[in-house]
Amino acid sequence: MLWYEPYQKQYPAKQTRLLQLFDLLGIPHEEPKQEWGSSLVIIGFSFDPNAMTITLPPSSRLELITALRQFAQPGTRRPLRDFERLAGWSQWSFNVAPLLRPGLSHMYDKMAGKSEVFQLMWVSVALCRELLWMAERLEASDGVLLLDSLEWSTLDADLVLYTDASAAGMGIWCPSLHRGLHSLIDKPEPSRIFFYEVLAVVSALTFAASFNHFHRIVIFTDNLNTVSMFNSLHAKPDYNPLLITAMNTLLDNNLQLRVLHIPGSENVIADAISRSNFDIVASKHPESTLHIFSPPELSSGSKSI
Image (cartoon, rainbow, N blue to C red; front, side, top):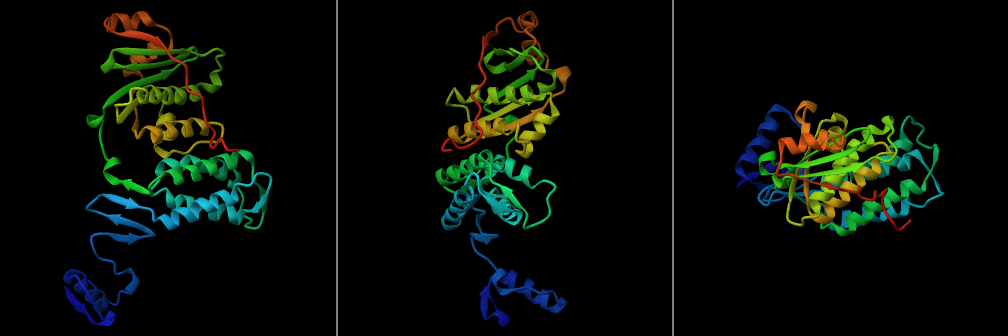
């Protein structure tokens, strides 16, 4: 430790020398920002590099939950400024609760293209469902993010799945279990193929969760937009129930997910299953079994409204 005269405090020697260097060079600094110790408070979060955790203080979590519930009053009108304020506050919490990002889909959709801060906007039922979903998930959370859960590769995966969708159906292929899953699309709509590409991934995640012993899941798809959606956890309102359903599955089962891209030329088995070309699967993997699956029921947020 070394004494730093301007602040009349002891700091770790290297930190004191750095402050002295700042003074010599004329670089401004402030006493409240001179944090040090085994755990640091940064932008309102407690960072513990030894435990590899980021913690949302209970008081801050409770304040955000209260704000979300107070805002979620369907049929009321609020100025754009209030929308922006709650969106920014929620974004801050995503540093600890990143899986709750889909909760702002309708919020961003309503704010898009608007700039007059006092413009009144309706609070819709759909928006309330998403905000209350975030509030309920924050209430059930301990407010701690394990940083080591964010960094892992395909080599660490407990289960690897491949998905694809065609105009005729959806296919899921699980090499390690020698199992294929198929679901027919009753009323094919070429314009909705992206919806089914994402639904195939959500269905594959539901399948993985059903085993109760896999933890890290990797799902390959040849649709780049699907990969982008799961990487950003942002979707237009029409597609957002797919993300919310997937996040519910992850949170309820303590799962970790990676959705990665695979070229279509390498996604042969999942593609064949989606097109009901089961002979291709049997010829390449004679030991495999094929099953019919039903996609999970999608959730648009809280069921309390």
